[in-house]
Length: 354
Image (cartoon, rainbow, N blue to C red; front, side, top):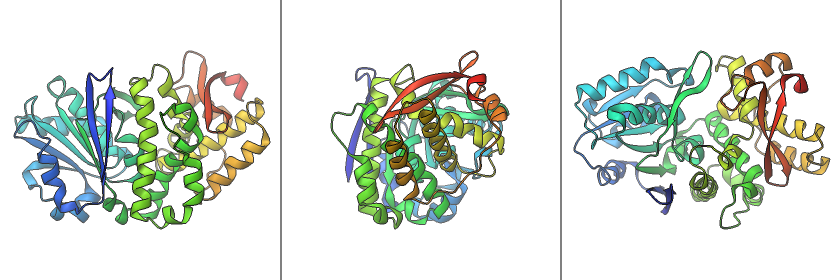
């Protein structure tokens, strides 16, 4: 078992992140220790409920089962969760628990951030993507017709429970989508300014086979490295005022890929990998990196056999990217590679890209 801690705003708020591979049937008891009040609402993924519902042991009346898919992260389900919490008469000392992937965590977290102006919140990520990224850091939100996560809040959980046993039943495509975010951390590691050298790129290269075959001990180590990098960033910049922007590496173009395909054709991780490839190509064009680093990055990405995504018309993509949260006035913000495992922020107009 690995225990990490996140300290936000000069240690005004801290919360534990617990990584383990204990029997899933013990999870309810582990969570109950963290509950301040008596009542709680579990927002759980439909897939997770089908596979692990009995093992988890929560009563039907304690659960809100959310259908799977990015399209479920909407105003309608947000309202349903709030209404369910109101019917249960949850108070500020009670808790909303998210059990599932990033969609469940983002939606339940946003509901928790606004219910009674803020209720306790616990994250239980069940996908690799949620384990290494979305469950830690406090970003919550829902999607709109105009784009992803345009309505949301920064709201830190009270605890995060990561159990690698959930990853054993994750389908191959969803497992690979999580690896997309993992590779992202390798390309931004030095810019994360962690207190220790974690050498994620070396770890990925040396343990490719063990990662792809889901060796649980290797996955625990992998998740720990990624979370340490993210924690380092979040502790220094909780609300994306500066350093935290580096976590958006690959996301500006990646979100546009998701939008142009109506979130139906590619997973988030697949789109982010395409976004990283676009970022490396753009960095090469702008002479920010040399061809040796570009070839090296291509090799790292190829090791994991990500789904290939075609290029879309730049004029359409630029317009979509201008709708991104990170866009400012007439410019589009990109996080681009500048050196091995280092990135920087750059702004371009639509004309400069097309």
